Image (cartoon, rainbow, N blue to C red; front, top):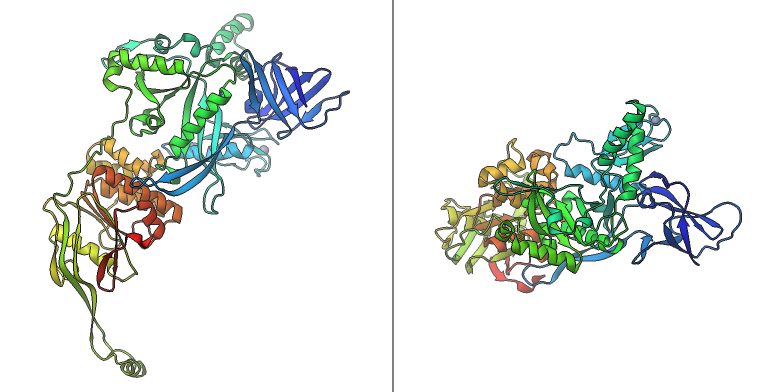
Length: 636
Ligand SMILES: [Zn+2]
């Protein structure tokens, strides 16, 4: 059944929370109470035309008919046609991670992006939000006790100090958001038990009320957006502060200063929601779970949010959207907005970069024209984040194994054993006191500059020995561990090895933060942040964390970052992802493979894990065992 009707009742929809509200609609002589999230309900005004579709039989007469969350569809009737409002936006996407070498898929996520609707969605947002703040002391959400009215600050649901329980405690607000904010959450579909449900969220707000531009010479150009785009794209905007000022002045004149500011705030908040009607949207926040960074999820989140804005005209759900803006200092260091297609345009008066994404041809043309005609924009060409790690000086020649043999000797001491065991061993013919084990025999091979080589084989087969020999050749290390028993290993004279062998070559992390550690080695903050981002540590909390405060998985990444900060041209890694679950190991391996190829680093990576091998996608696989080193391309 499909009915056209009108929003009725008070100017202010009955609305309790972001996660629950009621919209009252009259259609003929029927009164419908539509249950929905408060975030959606609050955007309706009395007198608006809507279309309701339901399969539930509707009986007229006394009282209201209630339709709950899953029982109806709702359109808002606009000048240019009906706009679907309910159910809220929800889209699934398979995000396939491809090998940088072959383009073959190596693993994939199934992600569902949908507007935050339920209370647990907003609790999850508060939990993710913690990762956004630089200080662990910052509390990110306000909570409210339904029993006694107490309001508390916390990052996860707190117990009420008066009632002693969290039974009736509900999330009230995410700090920093405005009543006009809309939230998109990204969930993993078909996740493993050890994986989180929520991996990211995006917050969309109306555009900021005013924007001025600071030119490189310090000059301020006021209301810059209105010089490039039609003014009505950004106005009227959500601006309760402006209304508050006006209204306060009026009330002060009439009633003096005895006016409850809180009441006043409620009034202007609704007024502002009623007025705002822009053709633009602003990405105010993108937060990705720390374990899922640097894997394209930030980009995917923004892409889904752009679809949401375009299809549903978020946040106001009124006019068609031409353009999406974002103002983000981090865009200087992390290019994911640009990778999605945002163009850098200018800095705000306070020096923060502004980027735009056009949703229509008109938006695209106006943006393009500005980038072509503005003298400053012509210089940067719409680009903000320029990679600074760049490429290393490549190896000047191959690493060569020439007729290399390596024998390990163990002394077997039967003397210390009890008599019966000694007799037993002798019965098996174990008498000789020196056991010689041939690890490598007559090995000839080359590792060419820029190659990514994986080394596989059973444990104890000589994989680590293989790495040590290369390390020894690069640094001229002496001793039976580093020099072959026969033959020789040659490294090019410009080889600068970065070595990670657990228990043998470890990095020093004192009390300095991860960011300081990487910055100290590079001497420049931009490549420092770039390296951390690319190793999956793109997070202010993680930047500031000390090594010992990190989880095992984060430590693996911090070690890689610290090693890469030394700008090696030859990377020798032994089981760098040994303690990680399969998916995390794959994410790091894929990121590593991509990074070393782009930087021109030659890498020799020992692993016993097939999933690591698959995600790393090496140029060659060497199989080490029983004295031989063989090409094993078909091993996976
Ligand atoms: Zn209480």
